[in-house]
Image 1 (tube, helix red, strand yellow):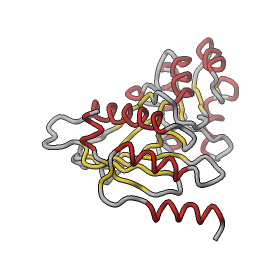
Image 2: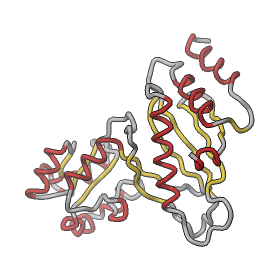
Image 3: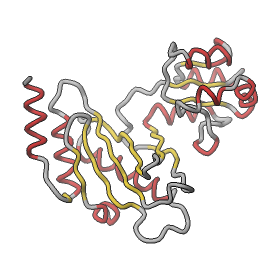
Length: 236
């Protein structure tokens, strides 16, 4: 077994059972995330009390300390808005290579992006190019509800680059999201976590009876996953 493997096993052997205090859980996870040479991602899994047949929990959250990840963006815009997107730091802009060509490159894996932003004016062109068939399955289709269809593309690019994270529930009613890196302090991870939980709370569907957030687990890429007291976080 490698040294890194031994360190990871050590942390897994030490992981607490049952529900932990939030500060202890975060501290353990951050320490476990430092057991490898690469900067592990700190992830959370939030189990929701929702009707998965009709409820769709989805939105964007501005993390106060960012994700620690370099985000690559494609912007579908023309004219002045295309220039604004470039100045804001967009990695790919459709005006440079064409809408159809950019979609094809994303489809074929020649262009890898984490987020696509579009102006309202260019959405019709995306429709004609059948962008939904390519971008939809990848979770990249611009959506006005998420702020990725906007006139102010420069602001959208800037927010995404600074550390905006999208959240959505999967079929089991669980939201998975990365909230930072093991190189972050425990305080930074906690503040990012609080911001994400607040955003999910604001997306609560009407008609939910009882606790909306049932459980929260936090872990690192290769470390243990620890459950902590949800009520403690919400009280804070």
